Figure: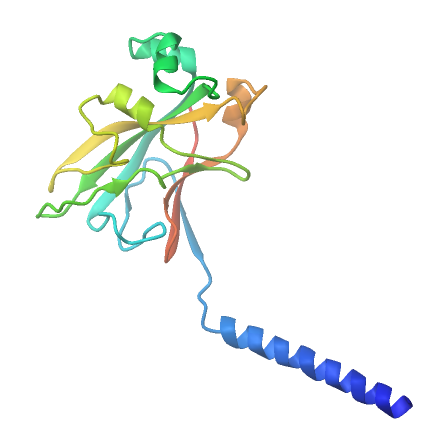
Length: 207
């Protein structure tokens, strides 16, 4: 009986060693994710880094965050000549309406010499914090830039030129139910530029 117990223990031990070796073998060539954090006001090249698929136009592009502000939705609408009633035209009935807008002003430059038919993807260029992430609201983006086709969820800059735009991130009541502007401002957020092979973020400090 004692001999059988020893054999059983050895078999279990061998199984555990086998599993450990397998895990090591699968992960031994995996590269650790590298994160690069940049300050506002610094020009950051997108380079060959991408989000999840390398199918948008990023090579040759650079971006710099000029400023960031947190505004109530009422302030944002008034600044752009609209009332809050306009929100009901943008959002479905009974949808959660944004209480604030995180307004991030960026300058984007295209250093390429030839134009292609791809866009920079705005869907994944999120504001992220420890617990939350926010996407650019294409409805609010279209309010600021009605000449832009908001069905593409992206934009491009002509080769050899740069443009400065405001990226409006809608802060919904469902996430910030009782928070004030100051409380939202106190949470550290980052503008996510890429995920692989290097995760690039710009640290945001709202005014």
